[in-house]
Length: 482
Image 1 (cartoon, rainbow, N blue to C red):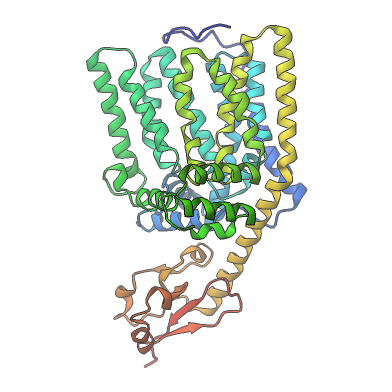
Image 2: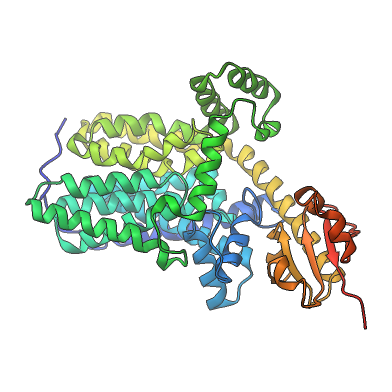
């Protein structure tokens, strides 16, 4: 087996017509989700927590801090502003484009790691067969964007280490700045790349300069996405999302989210929490992830084998797999593992040239067979997508009734903002409209959130709005007519 070459190795000249491979992969990435949607007849856009990302985009559009990682909501808001698409449709469009770009990105990564164009094309094809990724292209969810970001981060890192040219350094700095804004489990990758800039060979002045560029990118990226300037851990979404993960993992009692897990797992979780067995909790999270969707996990074993064969490159590629740590911490849905399948596949396929031709042919056939085996997990992924599509349909129906039952001048003053992505109403704090005489409404359990002053709220005109669709309780205040 060959050890990887030094860091300044130049790529061989590209063969004529090389662009046909990534172009074909891009078209395939557009076709596969469309074919799945036509085959299963999904009732609409899917995505876990329907409305969460769009509501965050709506808030950022109005100048509020994002409660989730802000890159995806910022892109949704930008696309809505440029095209006039609906919030959910804009998010799904971004997810579809990211998935279509994933194949070419894996092709580029495999090429950077030494694969021939046909093998690199195989590395771009296999992630498109992963059901949890393919169906992510039909959702308003940043999973395909996350997978693309992790692959592009490794492309930028390997490109800079190979050439040490400033365009690659600039690309790597941009990646370091934006990556923490993609998902909750992306910051460790950015921090690892920041360390890479500091420890890579070079004069101490050059190292300090590179590190300074990375730190500036980390500081300015939130500002470019409409977030207030501040330290990374001071961001509103970091405190909410990371705080929730830490709270759930270290709770002394069983968290409320366990109500949605299978009974056998729920009982084991309760025992582990009662004993304070954190390793047991971590193992149960990983086990539940495999139980819910096994296909993404199948790629991790060959991905590990390929990673071990990457020589000195494996220390850089290791950074790309750090988001897997989120799974034992509570990110138990299969899509959280699926975002790392493209990187695992690229590592494995790029390692095949290190085998002799007869062995290589057998491993190529085995890789294709593994990709087809993963398709057997499609029914489970499609069922999950169908449930979330139906839940989004309920949300749309609720929003349609809400628009009919409330005045166009009514102001949303609190509670759950997700229905507002389908029902255009101005938002304001309750204190702002109390003295303006405007009709107002609150979506969600208002008495439970304000038990002490509920009588006072009733005295100033707040009443229950009886809705046929009972997805959320609604309270409204109609000012008296003069």
